Length: 393
Length: 92
Image (cartoon, helix red, strand yellow):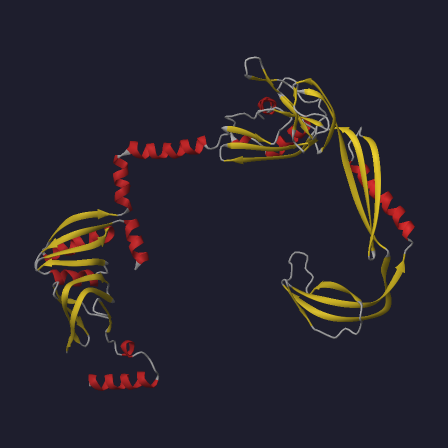
């Protein structure tokens, strides 16, 4: 019934009032002529209100004349009548369409460029570089290829280790992660602070420009300001400069290597058993058999029941293979392990140590805990720990 | 004569478990509470007021008495009446 009502709404229907004496006869005639009537309301003995479709109305009018009644249209309902009304209100419809068109147009442009994570590169610099390459506020979104833009930025700023570009509505968001730059490369036209690259104990501060806020002997954390670019002038106000200088600090590196003294080595004895299983989708069924070995290794092999290239057939046959292994204990020479561990630990430190750092001390600690020999190597170095970070970026 | 044919039809539909309203061309009346009554297989309206509706069928006149009666739907096979139904009578 609902489907019929929706259909009638789309095709249009009217509510009419019929006046006359032989109303029952009219209804029966409508029935025999297959005219669908609904919401038939009898108002009094000679008046009835009826809903009828537009198509049915024409046929009903013929019947109404035949039985000698009069009809009056009360309400016109449905889509065709709305369309009719809209035809008279051309400006309204036009405005409606223009409204959506404008919304669609405006939302297909980039209206804001946001750059996150650029600490050492001035944002203005990146934006002007983007502008030169045809990406600015007012560029249609369609014209921007995120992949191409990424390549452009990587080529221009080779010290960016990570670039992510996405459009959020009308905003172009560029996320950037920079590698630590040597201080000379940072653009000197912008005010900057020198902050600590890593934690350490300050041994020497030479501020060529800016205000040194740490002293020798002080412990600094990562990202703590060492030389501030905000200078106090005579009248208690601040002005910003590009801080410059050297900050040397004693830093500490450590690396730990563990090794078992008595090593367990597995050796296959050659005995093995096999059993089969089924795998349907991701669920496996195993036909359980007792495994007669104390120590064993499990190998699982998967085979498709039907091998078609195009279709990933969901039923697979699994073959479980259990191979018996023998555990053998081998005792290693402690002095030899100590030597080997120390070399491994120093290699680790060499990988992460800052270029140009001067090593001042080295300490090796061996510790035997049960079966495990732990070797820790501590290295202290004096190095430049300053890193320039642009202010207000 | 007609009665004997009807008897045969009744027996046959009982034996074959066929719906009796189809084999005998009887009206099917469904009453939902006192709110709604639908009559399938009717033969037209005889009288229609908001207090009483009389509908023709093969077994005679079905008389529905109530208040605020309204024909919600009217099709050749089906007629749906809503309102406060008080009395349904079959006059054969």
